[in-house]
Length: 285
Image (cartoon, rainbow, N blue to C red; front, side):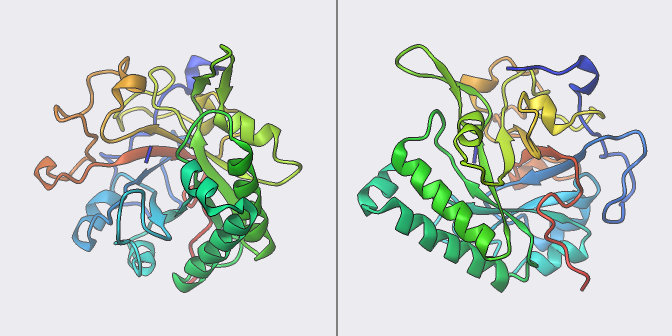
Protein backbone atom coordinates (compact mmCIF):
# COMPACT_ATOMS: atom_id res chain seq x y z
CA UNK A 1 0.00 0.00 0.00
CA UNK A 2 0.66 3.07 -0.45
CA UNK A 3 -2.30 21.57 0.89
CA UNK A 4 -3.52 23.07 3.70
CA UNK A 5 -1.01 22.89 6.51
CA UNK A 6 -2.05 23.28 10.11
CA UNK A 7 0.04 24.96 12.79
CA UNK A 8 3.53 23.68 13.45
CA UNK A 9 2.35 22.65 16.90
CA UNK A 10 0.64 19.57 15.46
CA UNK A 11 3.21 18.70 12.79
CA UNK A 12 4.88 16.11 14.96
CA UNK A 13 4.47 12.55 15.95
CA UNK A 14 3.55 10.25 18.79
CA UNK A 15 6.52 8.49 20.39
CA UNK A 16 5.95 5.44 22.49
CA UNK A 17 8.92 3.21 21.79
CA UNK A 18 10.42 3.92 25.21
CA UNK A 19 7.16 3.38 27.08
CA UNK A 20 6.18 0.16 28.89
CA UNK A 21 3.53 -2.08 27.36
CA UNK A 22 0.21 -0.23 27.59
CA UNK A 23 -3.26 -1.60 28.04
CA UNK A 24 -5.56 -1.11 25.06
CA UNK A 25 -6.64 2.52 24.85
CA UNK A 26 -3.96 3.80 27.23
CA UNK A 27 -1.34 6.38 26.31
CA UNK A 28 0.75 8.93 28.18
CA UNK A 29 -1.18 12.16 28.73
CA UNK A 30 1.29 14.20 26.65
CA UNK A 31 0.36 12.39 23.46
CA UNK A 32 -2.52 13.57 21.28
CA UNK A 33 -2.53 10.94 18.53
CA UNK A 34 -2.33 7.16 18.46
CA UNK A 35 0.36 5.45 16.38
CA UNK A 36 -0.33 2.30 14.38
CA UNK A 37 1.20 0.26 11.60
CA UNK A 38 0.00 -1.57 8.54
CA UNK A 39 1.66 -4.00 6.16
CA UNK A 40 0.62 -6.57 3.58
CA UNK A 41 2.01 -9.57 5.49
CA UNK A 42 1.07 -10.59 9.03
CA UNK A 43 4.10 -9.82 11.28
CA UNK A 44 4.04 -13.12 13.15
CA UNK A 45 2.71 -14.02 16.59
CA UNK A 46 6.19 -13.87 18.14
CA UNK A 47 6.58 -10.17 17.26
CA UNK A 48 3.27 -8.92 18.66
CA UNK A 49 4.47 -8.13 22.18
CA UNK A 50 7.39 -6.07 20.89
CA UNK A 51 5.24 -4.27 18.32
CA UNK A 52 2.64 -3.45 20.97
CA UNK A 53 5.28 -1.51 22.92
CA UNK A 54 5.16 1.06 20.10
CA UNK A 55 1.84 0.64 18.30
CA UNK A 56 -1.76 0.98 19.50
CA UNK A 57 -3.36 -0.69 16.47
CA UNK A 58 -2.61 -2.74 13.41
CA UNK A 59 -3.86 -2.84 9.86
CA UNK A 60 -5.89 -5.97 9.06
CA UNK A 61 -6.62 -7.24 5.54
CA UNK A 62 -9.95 -8.94 4.85
CA UNK A 63 -8.84 -10.27 1.46
CA UNK A 64 -5.62 -10.71 -0.47
CA UNK A 65 -3.49 -7.55 -0.30
CA UNK A 66 -2.39 -5.90 -3.58
CA UNK A 67 -0.20 -8.27 -5.58
CA UNK A 68 -0.67 -11.18 -3.16
CA UNK A 69 -2.24 -14.57 -3.88
CA UNK A 70 -3.01 -15.34 -0.22
CA UNK A 71 -3.95 -13.41 2.92
CA UNK A 72 -1.76 -14.17 5.96
CA UNK A 73 -3.99 -12.05 8.26
CA UNK A 74 -6.87 -14.51 8.08
CA UNK A 75 -7.71 -15.90 11.52
CA UNK A 76 -5.36 -13.52 13.40
CA UNK A 77 -7.91 -11.06 14.86
CA UNK A 78 -8.08 -12.77 18.26
CA UNK A 79 -4.28 -12.98 18.62
CA UNK A 80 -3.98 -9.27 17.90
CA UNK A 81 -6.76 -8.35 20.31
CA UNK A 82 -5.28 -10.48 23.09
CA UNK A 83 -1.97 -8.69 22.52
CA UNK A 84 -3.78 -5.37 23.07
CA UNK A 85 -4.09 -4.07 19.52
CA UNK A 86 -6.92 -2.10 17.99
CA UNK A 87 -7.61 -2.42 14.28
CA UNK A 88 -7.56 -0.74 10.89
CA UNK A 89 -9.65 -3.12 8.77
CA UNK A 90 -8.93 -3.01 5.05
CA UNK A 91 -10.45 -4.56 1.91
CA UNK A 92 -8.46 -4.59 -1.33
CA UNK A 93 -10.55 -2.91 -4.04
CA UNK A 94 -10.35 -3.07 -7.83
CA UNK A 95 -8.17 -1.12 -10.21
CA UNK A 96 -9.78 0.95 -12.93
CA UNK A 97 -8.83 -1.66 -15.54
CA UNK A 98 -10.46 -4.42 -13.51
CA UNK A 99 -13.64 -2.41 -12.98
CA UNK A 100 -13.79 -1.41 -16.65
CA UNK A 101 -13.31 -4.96 -17.91
CA UNK A 102 -16.06 -6.28 -15.60
CA UNK A 103 -18.60 -4.24 -17.56
CA UNK A 104 -20.92 -3.38 -14.64
CA UNK A 105 -19.23 -1.28 -11.99
CA UNK A 106 -22.26 -1.15 -9.70
CA UNK A 107 -22.70 -4.91 -9.72
CA UNK A 108 -19.00 -5.50 -9.00
CA UNK A 109 -18.99 -2.89 -6.22
CA UNK A 110 -22.03 -4.49 -4.58
CA UNK A 111 -20.49 -7.96 -4.90
CA UNK A 112 -17.21 -6.80 -3.36
CA UNK A 113 -19.12 -5.10 -0.52
CA UNK A 114 -20.85 -8.40 0.23
CA UNK A 115 -17.46 -10.15 0.20
CA UNK A 116 -16.01 -7.57 2.60
CA UNK A 117 -18.94 -7.91 4.99
CA UNK A 118 -18.79 -11.70 4.86
CA UNK A 119 -15.04 -11.68 5.59
CA UNK A 120 -15.46 -9.20 8.45
CA UNK A 121 -18.11 -11.40 10.04
CA UNK A 122 -16.00 -14.54 9.56
CA UNK A 123 -13.05 -12.83 11.26
CA UNK A 124 -15.21 -11.90 14.24
CA UNK A 125 -15.43 -8.15 13.73
CA UNK A 126 -18.59 -6.69 15.29
CA UNK A 127 -21.26 -4.64 13.55
CA UNK A 128 -20.31 -0.97 13.17
CA UNK A 129 -16.67 -1.89 12.52
CA UNK A 130 -15.25 0.54 9.94
CA UNK A 131 -14.14 -1.27 6.78
CA UNK A 132 -11.78 0.74 4.58
CA UNK A 133 -11.76 0.14 0.82
CA UNK A 134 -8.23 0.29 -0.58
CA UNK A 135 -8.39 2.86 -3.41
CA UNK A 136 -4.80 2.70 -4.61
CA UNK A 137 -5.09 4.79 -7.76
CA UNK A 138 -4.92 8.53 -7.22
CA UNK A 139 -6.30 11.61 -8.94
CA UNK A 140 -9.90 12.27 -9.97
CA UNK A 141 -12.01 9.11 -10.02
CA UNK A 142 -13.31 8.07 -13.41
CA UNK A 143 -17.07 7.35 -13.72
CA UNK A 144 -16.61 3.58 -13.41
CA UNK A 145 -14.42 3.98 -10.34
CA UNK A 146 -16.96 6.28 -8.71
CA UNK A 147 -19.87 3.92 -9.46
CA UNK A 148 -17.90 0.99 -8.01
CA UNK A 149 -16.92 2.95 -4.89
CA UNK A 150 -20.45 4.19 -4.23
CA UNK A 151 -21.92 0.70 -4.65
CA UNK A 152 -19.32 -0.70 -2.26
CA UNK A 153 -20.01 2.01 0.32
CA UNK A 154 -23.77 1.52 0.07
CA UNK A 155 -23.42 -2.25 0.45
CA UNK A 156 -21.18 -2.04 3.51
CA UNK A 157 -23.30 0.60 5.25
CA UNK A 158 -26.57 -1.23 4.57
CA UNK A 159 -25.13 -4.39 6.14
CA UNK A 160 -24.60 -2.69 9.51
CA UNK A 161 -20.89 -1.97 9.10
CA UNK A 162 -19.37 1.47 8.42
CA UNK A 163 -17.72 2.24 5.09
CA UNK A 164 -14.40 4.00 4.81
CA UNK A 165 -11.88 4.57 2.06
CA UNK A 166 -8.08 4.45 2.03
CA UNK A 167 -6.98 6.97 -0.59
CA UNK A 168 -4.43 9.59 -1.55
CA UNK A 169 -4.26 12.94 0.20
CA UNK A 170 -1.62 14.22 -2.25
CA UNK A 171 -2.49 16.59 -5.10
CA UNK A 172 -2.22 15.01 -8.55
CA UNK A 173 -1.80 17.10 -11.70
CA UNK A 174 -4.31 16.63 -14.50
CA UNK A 175 -3.62 17.26 -18.17
CA UNK A 176 -5.41 20.59 -17.90
CA UNK A 177 -2.98 21.68 -15.19
CA UNK A 178 -5.56 21.42 -12.40
CA UNK A 179 -4.58 19.68 -9.17
CA UNK A 180 -6.90 17.02 -7.77
CA UNK A 181 -6.66 15.34 -4.37
CA UNK A 182 -8.39 11.96 -4.42
CA UNK A 183 -9.74 12.26 -0.87
CA UNK A 184 -11.27 15.65 -1.65
CA UNK A 185 -12.69 14.40 -4.95
CA UNK A 186 -14.36 11.43 -3.24
CA UNK A 187 -15.78 13.62 -0.48
CA UNK A 188 -17.08 16.28 -2.87
CA UNK A 189 -18.92 13.66 -4.97
CA UNK A 190 -20.15 11.37 -2.19
CA UNK A 191 -23.80 12.32 -2.72
CA UNK A 192 -24.44 12.59 1.00
CA UNK A 193 -22.88 9.22 1.81
CA UNK A 194 -21.18 8.96 5.16
CA UNK A 195 -17.59 7.86 4.62
CA UNK A 196 -14.60 7.55 6.94
CA UNK A 197 -11.25 8.61 5.48
CA UNK A 198 -7.81 7.03 5.84
CA UNK A 199 -5.58 9.32 3.80
CA UNK A 200 -2.07 8.80 2.49
CA UNK A 201 0.41 11.67 2.42
CA UNK A 202 4.04 10.65 2.81
CA UNK A 203 5.44 13.90 1.42
CA UNK A 204 7.74 15.82 3.76
CA UNK A 205 6.33 18.16 4.91
CA UNK A 206 3.75 17.50 6.29
CA UNK A 207 5.05 13.99 7.02
CA UNK A 208 7.94 13.64 9.49
CA UNK A 209 9.10 10.55 7.56
CA UNK A 210 9.94 7.23 9.21
CA UNK A 211 9.98 8.23 12.86
CA UNK A 212 8.27 7.42 16.14
CA UNK A 213 10.00 10.19 18.05
CA UNK A 214 7.43 12.96 17.58
CA UNK A 215 4.54 13.40 19.99
CA UNK A 216 1.77 15.67 18.80
CA UNK A 217 0.77 14.66 15.27
CA UNK A 218 -2.91 14.32 14.34
CA UNK A 219 -4.60 13.06 11.15
CA UNK A 220 -5.67 16.60 10.20
CA UNK A 221 -1.98 17.51 9.83
CA UNK A 222 -2.07 15.47 6.60
CA UNK A 223 -3.71 18.47 4.97
CA UNK A 224 -7.14 16.80 5.01
CA UNK A 225 -9.05 18.27 7.95
CA UNK A 226 -11.66 15.51 7.69
CA UNK A 227 -9.17 12.60 7.87
CA UNK A 228 -9.80 9.94 10.51
CA UNK A 229 -6.42 8.25 9.93
CA UNK A 230 -3.24 9.47 8.27
CA UNK A 231 -0.66 7.14 6.74
CA UNK A 232 2.44 9.32 6.77
CA UNK A 233 5.20 6.84 5.97
CA UNK A 234 5.37 3.94 3.52
CA UNK A 235 7.81 1.10 3.00
CA UNK A 236 9.67 1.25 0.80
CA UNK A 237 10.09 5.01 0.75
CA UNK A 238 8.39 6.48 -2.32
CA UNK A 239 11.12 8.70 -3.72
CA UNK A 240 8.75 10.57 -6.02
CA UNK A 241 6.77 11.83 -3.01
CA UNK A 242 9.05 11.38 0.01
CA UNK A 243 12.31 12.64 -1.49
CA UNK A 244 12.22 15.67 0.85
CA UNK A 245 11.93 13.52 3.98
CA UNK A 246 14.63 13.33 6.66
CA UNK A 247 17.21 10.57 6.43
CA UNK A 248 15.32 8.47 8.98
CA UNK A 249 14.50 5.47 6.79
CA UNK A 250 16.71 2.40 6.80
CA UNK A 251 19.46 2.42 4.18
CA UNK A 252 17.38 -0.04 2.14
CA UNK A 253 14.58 2.55 1.96
CA UNK A 254 12.24 0.77 4.35
CA UNK A 255 10.79 1.80 7.71
CA UNK A 256 11.39 -0.70 10.51
CA UNK A 257 9.70 -0.69 13.93
CA UNK A 258 11.66 -0.18 17.16
CA UNK A 259 12.78 -3.36 18.89
CA UNK A 260 12.59 -5.54 15.78
CA UNK A 261 15.85 -6.66 14.19
CA UNK A 262 15.99 -5.18 10.66
CA UNK A 263 17.34 -8.54 9.50
CA UNK A 264 13.75 -9.81 9.79
CA UNK A 265 12.82 -7.30 7.08
CA UNK A 266 9.61 -6.60 8.96
CA UNK A 267 9.05 -3.23 7.30
CA UNK A 268 5.93 -1.22 8.10
CA UNK A 269 3.85 1.73 6.98
CA UNK A 270 3.14 4.21 9.78
CA UNK A 271 -0.25 5.70 10.66
CA UNK A 272 -1.68 8.13 13.19
CA UNK A 273 -5.31 8.25 14.33
CA UNK A 274 -7.44 9.90 16.99
CA UNK A 275 -8.39 6.49 18.42
CA UNK A 276 -6.49 3.44 19.64
CA UNK A 277 -9.00 1.34 17.67
CA UNK A 278 -9.71 3.37 14.50
CA UNK A 279 -11.95 0.72 12.92
CA UNK A 280 -13.76 0.02 16.20
CA UNK A 281 -12.96 -3.64 15.64
CA UNK A 282 -12.29 -4.79 19.21
CA UNK A 283 -14.80 -6.96 21.02
CA UNK A 284 -15.35 -7.81 24.69
CA UNK A 285 -14.14 -11.39 24.37
